[in-house]
Image: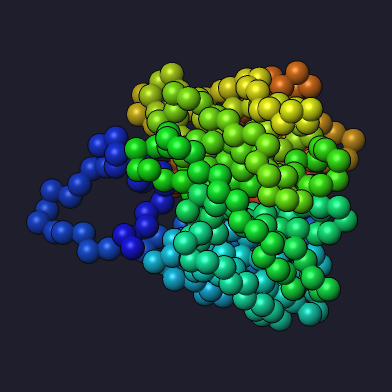
Length: 362
């Protein structure tokens, strides 16, 4: 296995924008410590997975700083760190592990101070490490859809306890012609689609460029749509608001977009573009990597989306009923040229690259 580097660096290297050292030293390896994934595991606690393989839990607070409740090294940097974190129920969440397993974490007290591995879920290593995941109910049964590095989605069904899951089937969602120059099929995004007849539906987004709608009940692929046939980079993250789908990617060149909005039609499960935008501060940059997109809500207020870009900016905006994007603006939250991992729980928002930034939607 080749050493894994963060996607923004991989993309910049391909464009020839990484400056090499002028002194006679040969790079022998780098361990990256920035955040790769973040997710709220209950209303007030969120987990952050980093490229170095560490998993940390934090309590959302109104104070200027908050230390971790618990820190666990659960992965090897050779496996690209912690890429997927999915809450499964009270006191339980899933994380990626190695190329052939997932970890189910549990806290008996519910306050996460006694976090421990409750189960290891094994699967065929040919699927690859888990990149993303989401829960969905299919005909009354809680299910878990996991996107993998090999371009597959594994579908799991909950047993008699929230820590017990059985692999039901795997679905091949690979595009025949990837839209990236590395022939990658990593499924970077999975989101539940709140439409249909109760069979459970998810949409996936891959580095090969495909948006794929899958019926969880039987693993049927209902549609597969390239998000942008002219794209040079694949999908990094996605989020669903009702029947609207937000997709983020790396914009290459001045004309490319890095935020896209689509409408999902349950009558035929087609995915249709409604709008696009480029979240960019410096127009001269050869690429602007949009790292993540999440949804934040406050009771009685409009729904907002938030995006994190490699310029160290946290962007906010809204989607109209017609699927048009309204960009509200951005705040500079760091200087890291790799973006932040975002997560939201209602009005609570956390953005983590190296430092943790917490916000309340107001």
